[in-house]
Length: 261
Figure (cartoon, rainbow, N blue to C red):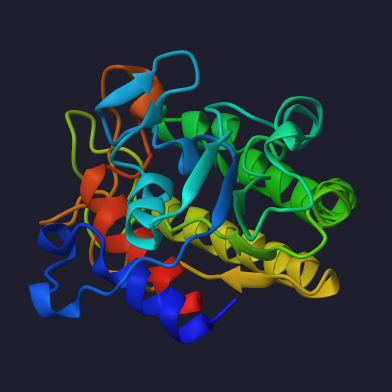
């Protein structure tokens, strides 16, 4: 793969959304691209869903990237996917001809949903749930990631693989919403846990020779409760809560992936 040409092509897509001038457009580089993983890759929260079961969105970063590359996209990421789900249901998107793979996985294997729910509950101390999640991050998640990443390498041996991380959800400065939950202190503690997750994901990616794409800075100043959030807070439908919105994919995930190519 030609990294410079890939990056130029990727940055050309959805120019209006990421504020790129028309002159930045480049000739598309043909590629076979597979997007694997969970809701953060399927586009849950971005809207404009073409698959209601997996909440896959045409506004998600995989679609933006494929458009920019002129790539053939195998869009296998699915909302709610665990590491086991990816192994059982998504590897069919890969073969020896796959050029590029992106993946977010792990967020549904660590009890994080339960930790967030506890921190949203008034008068409830969610510290224990956060600590339990961190225990799973450090103890069980590395083995799960090793299995997933090894399977990806086996099925797509010549592909460039980008492992995308997760953003910090909160600004840890203000509260918002009807109940003003979580508290600022709880937000800060949850952001610490997000940093632990980033370390685990980055180390596992490096062990397999994959590129880790850290998106925490891409979402800085655009967290839940910020003036221009790239993430939803608590909302209906509930599945979209605490997921990137369309801006989060266009201005958060997508540029971070493009820079990594």
